[in-house]
Image 1 (cartoon, rainbow, N blue to C red):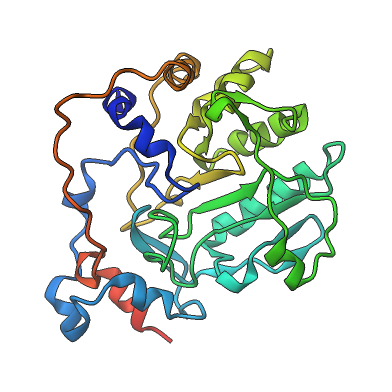
Image 2: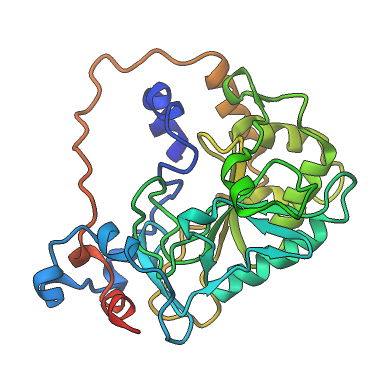
Length: 311
C-alpha cells in the first residue's frame, strides 16, 4: 500500500502544510484517457498554468464540467458558493477560492444543514474550494483543481454574521495531539457526526483527515462502519478536513482517483499512528527525489484551453 512507501519520508511530509501536498493515489488510466493541450496552446503553452488560472476572477460561461484529475485539471461553468448562507460562511474571501462544480456547491449546502443540527454548531465554515476556473493555484494546494474538493474547518460555526474582515483574521482550531497520533480535548462527538454525515453522502469519494481523528472515529463508531472506508488518514488536515467528490455521473474527461482499499481502513490508520509515535529508522540510502516543476498550460487536459479562453 502507498503508506508503506511513505514511511521513510514521514518526517519531511509531516512538515507539509495542510493541503499543500497531493493526497492522491493516482489512477494509472489517467494518462491514457486525457490528451493534453501540448503545443496547441500556442505562445501560452509554456506559461505556468497557475499564473493563467490564478488570474481569472470569474467562472467560464460554459456548461458545468470537471476536466482532468484532482491535481491536474480545471472546471468549466463553476459556481460560486455564496459568501454567507443560513448554515454556512465562506472564509478567506480575498483568495476567491469559493468556486466549485455545482455538485460540490450542493454538497456543501447539504452538509451545512446537517452540521447545524449538532449541539454547539450553527453550521460550517468553508475553507478553500477551487479557483473560478479551477486549475493549479498560485499558492498552497496541489489538488483542488477541478471543482470537486473542499476544505471544511474543524472550528464549529457559531457566528454566521462574520464580516469579510473578520473572516480574514479568524482561524480554525487544531484537533491534534502528539503530532497527529491522537485527538486533543477540542475534539467532540459532534466532529465525529459531521464527518460521518459527509462520508455518508454517496457523491463523496474520500475525506482526508489527520491519523489520530480516524483512529478515534474507529474506536467510537458502534453502528454502521461502512462510511469509515472513505475517511483516509493524511498529513496535516487537523485544522480542517478535506472532502473530495467522485466525478459526476456521466462526466466525460473527468478521471476519478483510484478507489480506497476494501474495509474500514482502521488498521491502516492505527499503523499511521504507530509510526508517528515510533518513527521507523530513516532509509540510509534514500532515492534521489526529482524536483517537481510547476505545471505549464501544455500539461493540462485539452479541454482546459477552452475553459481558460471562454468568456
